[in-house]
Image (tube, rainbow, N blue to C red):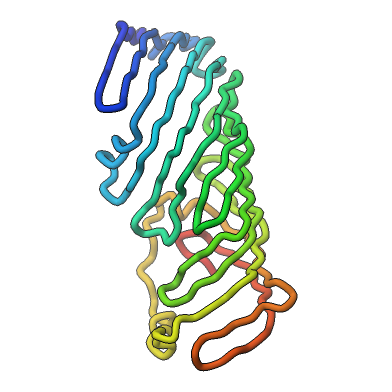
Length: 248
């Protein structure tokens, strides 16, 4: 009833991993005594997901003792110039630097920063393991440029919070638009027609279907909208509901 891992050593390009320990599989309590350390080149992640582009280095030490039901974790994860992006998302993350610290049944975010859309993003919060995963993470961004949809460019400041269990998450917070521009090449008629099409229902098991939205989008006091045809001033006050898969 016990899984025993003999001292394991894996090496590769900019990668060096060591692990050993035991895990109770069937016995009760399910005792846990695992130790791992090393460094990983995140280009390896591209082998698991062809839509993922990643680089940079992660160094870590981890010890897990106690039981599977109530683990006692220790150690940390250090990010050094990590970059991650997905082909389907307009913005990726680059220059990720900072530390995650394991503390008993919690993983705390310590001084983690990243760049996205030319602006800085600061992350905080924790993930805890108590009969499943539960997270409470925050993100604060300044002067982040978003080019979505194609032909539309906006800049925004944001303060967001992701909270909940792995199958019931809520993304909430505030986004303030500070700049907004439309390319003169954008065909507004075709854009309006495409927005009225009915999309197929999302996979109910997709992660994006388990993230509920409650995001308030406003604009700076005097938001200028301009392209080669017109120059206007106005304001924006929207609230995004629904889920990431089906926003409204």
